[in-house]
Length: 187
Image 1 (cartoon, rainbow, N blue to C red):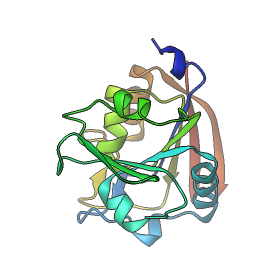
Image 2 (image 1 turned 90 degrees about the vertical axis):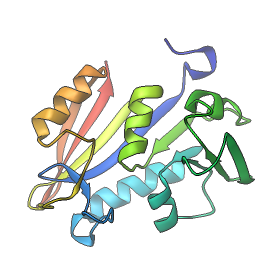
Image 3 (image 1 turned 180 degrees about the horizontal axis):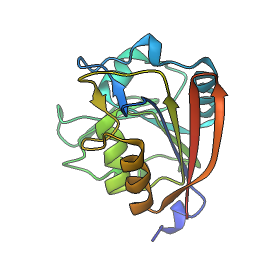
């Protein structure tokens, strides 16, 4: 059950995966061939409209724009620290994602979750999503790539995983000739 300050909170996840359900290659890097221009534009718009962005260390190092408030889970520190007003690192083993978000003033109205794999799982397991945009690059395969979530190797596995966490597909749309986006919402 959501607490009072979470009643109107919107938490949106974003991921683009290959047709074999990977978000990165075997080195943890998202290849250029996985990027869809339309998906990228929608993703950036949502990030710009969010009060807080949760992203993993690799994503932070690759996309470290200072204009956004960012929250980075990491096991490399104890507890948490604010590097500056728009950047906070926290160890989810020491402080819950809910507690760290409660430290923000004003409390965020919209949070975007930009991945990677452990960040998506952390939010699924320890917090919640109200929406999740999962884009699938239908012609892209990544042999030995890193999956969206460990153990999920088919689109059907992902649909079942989402349903088990209270999410269902609200809309499925074609973004371009190679990319389909599934919009999941909390039911």
